[in-house]
Image 1 (cartoon, one colour):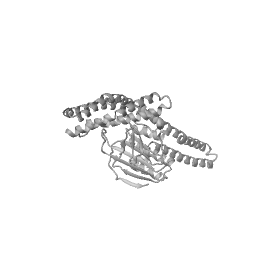
Image 2: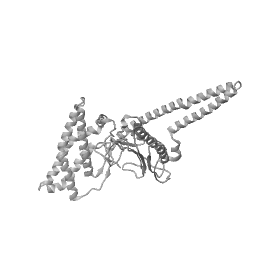
Image 3: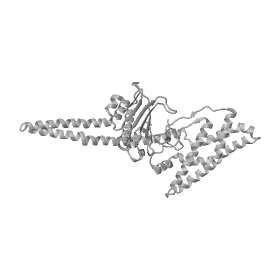
Image 4: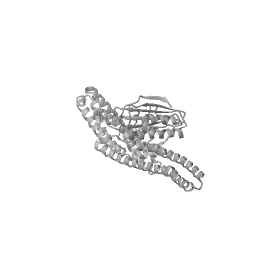
Length: 425
């Protein structure tokens, strides 16, 4: 699995290529780890105190650069300064989150909002609009004053002979207080998480409604321009044939034959509309069979590796199917790839804070790279559709390739069936 970086919503692959996260925050409870005890633990938290003391000048620089950059952001020269300040601030805050987690023995989720792939200015704006960014600035003030004093006290007690006995009792308490201050400012409380989650669900619902409205209009347009037009023409042809049947039966017969072909064309249009709503292959063969069918239809060779022991819920199945179809369409249109691949598997064990397993899909190609979801509506629509199921999407597409699109949707499978398959299509 990809691992988080210091910048919220960003991950890397094993090859080091960045991935941008599109998705929603998951509300989780702290995960408690086993803590060492006695002398070893006190030495360890003293080491953390030393590190926090050394962070003091970085915190001051990060605060000054961020505030100055924010003040100058109305002019172009201030934007890069503001960006540097935010990067320093977030890096320092993330490291202190890690230290606070280690001191308390509990782990909390990343509180940052996802950063979209929308150019550096769009990412800067997203970070600036994240409420946690401004809490981190407030935290710097606390960390550079009270927090610094607590950490420095622990260090001085450790290095002085007279403070040794006091250090034994004071170090855990003082560093525990420092960790409590850090966590209070650098994490959301559970009630705050719920408030953020409600806001996200409201936004996701609005996006889903908008997406449904667009889809409904597309279906109406397809029916109006396709099947409906053909059926109107069919009705007119049959009417004329009926009128001239007695005077010119041969011509009427030819018109009826033409009407038969029009009927076939109208049925074909209706099938196309139905396939765009819920493909029959998906209903008949499930997600695995439908994905293999998509791969076979590609002009580029596509290798599929599918490991599913059952079927996801129908709504999840449909969303993931259309997401894969959109990714493959982009491969065919823009990637100039010689080879592509799809991996699809389900992890039945819930991750911390989740109540269900995880369906994970990776669509990759060896093309030119440089894919930017922010420039088109297709992948943004995919992210919106997945977000309705708490799904997430990452796009990794450095110049020169490879392009990797990773999809994750929490769900459980039903009706165990079929064995894994791995074959080129």
